[in-house]
Image 1 (tube, rainbow, N blue to C red):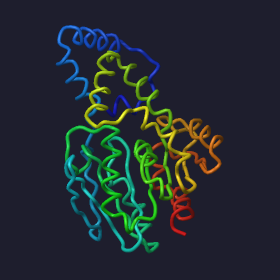
Image 2 (image 1 turned 180 degrees about the vertical axis):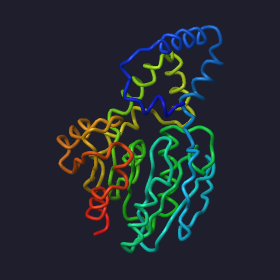
Image 3 (image 1 turned 90 degrees about the vertical axis):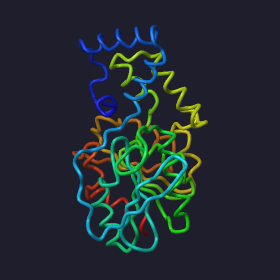
Image 4 (image 1 turned 30 degrees about the vertical axis):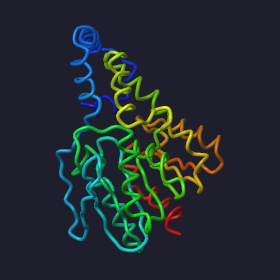
Length: 281
């Protein structure tokens, strides 16, 4: 259900369901606040695990990384210097298989992982702090071999929060994260009080504030130029927000693409060309 909230381009429309959800949510937060918070958490923090199982290529390797937050499923191919790939909300490492093949063929190792609550990794719930911590665990485990990071969608938010000493390629970067996150959720009719309570619970649990995780404020602290590949007509991650960052930061190199949307852009030829030029030379 969370994917239907986050991946919609109809945040401004209000249907009958909006008023029904608003009435139920507002009533529950008054009558049974703990139950309302529990249900809101379940609704907002449960990513969709795809029912379509991508066939793992026979020459790919898999492993498990044990962490304090559960197991992370690791998929890799190739040898030598390593590029880490990190997916977005309700995504998985399988989205990167074609890209990983190209990285391996170029003489490098491609290493992708499923975030907590996604793919074959452990955990029922997911959130931005867990995205950041998951990526941190992987980077720490393989630190000696890693030469760059490729991220997509919400994965770009996590990537910009960590690994500031590595080159990055951002695919469909998500800026204006908090405002977009809030507006899409409240557009469903969910009580703002219930929404804020869930956010507060997440911040307390992970000792991280959402304001401190906003990706825009981390760009200037990166040691290498940041390459961003973004479709001009992306419905879910507005292109103009990436343009703003390119205007503010000379080291933020934005490359516009057309006709690939938010998902197909991952494995398109233009994205591969920018990965080659930015990370593999």
